[in-house]
Image (cartoon, rainbow, N blue to C red; front, side):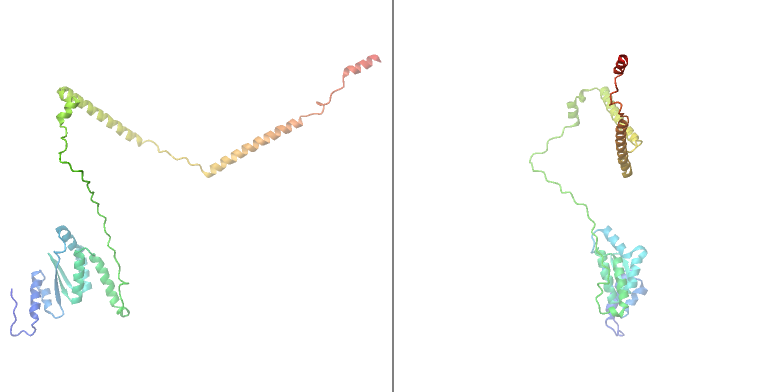
Length: 286
């Protein structure tokens, strides 16, 4: 296609505008929207995004991040930048002012290079839009008001480094075959009947071991858990009280026994009674 001027052309820059119009039409922009680029205040920018990512799946995933669910992210960017944005194939077509096109290019490149998600750019643009309405902050730095997002690096699995074995010019020793193993164990010389009987016995042993293990697992579910024995402080105090009571009772019983022994003592037991024989002798003499 060629673009040429006529004698009625007053603005020579219209050739560049016509070139941009053809580019937009080739990128599937509607004719009604593409004709707007002929205005002096409207500019366009076509961003190639196929060179940022090598893998096709990763490229499709990041391009979908730029669009968002139901193209919600793209609509938010259009409102905040006052630009028309169309994502088609390997390019992003944008139409608007120079300031808006600069913001759109930054968002697209950061998204495709995986530097920052478009949603974070949307939040940042919203804050800038609100700050621009306040005349007090017109000549101030807005970095303290902007949200700061830290990129979280997901730890990837470390590749296990295989240790190199010492080099030997000789090949590894040949592994014994199945027939060699049968010859060593003597199974090779057994008849088919004995082989089948031996296999059956081994199978029965494995089944019995497995059945016993399953039985132990089933019975373990019905065993009550071991409850830890904890002595309460109140019970310990009661035990101490009981020991003190027993000691006091023993002491009182001992004291009572000694007191009874003292009460049973009589003076007559220690005084000798006068002999009756001497009285009888005196009466006889008289």
